[in-house]
Length: 361
Image (cartoon, rainbow, N blue to C red; front, side, top):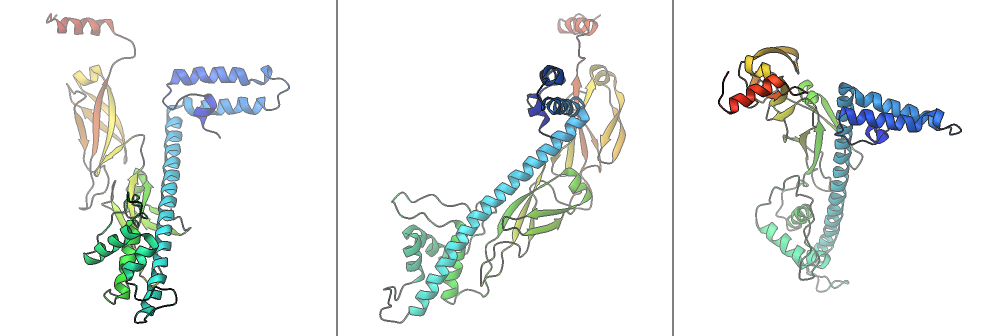
């Protein structure tokens, strides 16, 4: 079915009363009795009813929101992967062009004058002729120093155009490739050299991490790669898949760097290996203490709320978080939140007024 929020014409943060009012208005407008002769009225009326059934039930609404958010995250991840692959493909094409030019120039060395007038060109000359002086300076500087390891995020970002009007400098990945080819043609590079790494984000759920599920990623070049979530993985963890990165003829394939991104969860948020959740409590339970049932990743647990518990306090249940890298698990941290009654209570209001003015009764 279509997005129920769109069907009813309400925002995603609409409360129960807004949703009910919108349903009544839409149902009245779309009712077949008011639209005789319109064959689509019945289906529109049914769609409005289905949307309301999803959104009026808090649990069904949570499940829908979670699934919709996960789908959006996956779509964003695929789009980012496609964009990164397009930039990498362009960098690879440029590097292969340089390789052809450098091979041609290398074959012409020692000749007095080649037919194209390029005899005696150095690798830097070829780079400058194809990409401009700024790129040649980049390649020369990179070749004289230890190759820099680029992070997943900036390895394929194109540099800004040179303000002097020259051609823009090469992207970092292309510089790595060009520098490697220069060293190879000069006989100073180990053979075979390794192509640069590629990167991608993987959206996973808390449930995936707890179950240590297998994750399948589809890359922009239509390849699929799989890896298993292991203990010690949490938000920001980087998984290195050897040989699954950029592939360049004559070079060892680079690695694929997969960064773990935990999808937003309706019940928990992740901090390291700990899971945090919120437990609403009434004013009387905060003052007097109480026993409460709490949903955890391992099922329902009974917890004790100590007397005089404020919203700044937490209850920590050990060993109910994510699996850490030391053979244990993080904790489930329950954050207390005091919730007042839906309607004002005169006795409590009167008591608070007396306490504010120091008149204790």
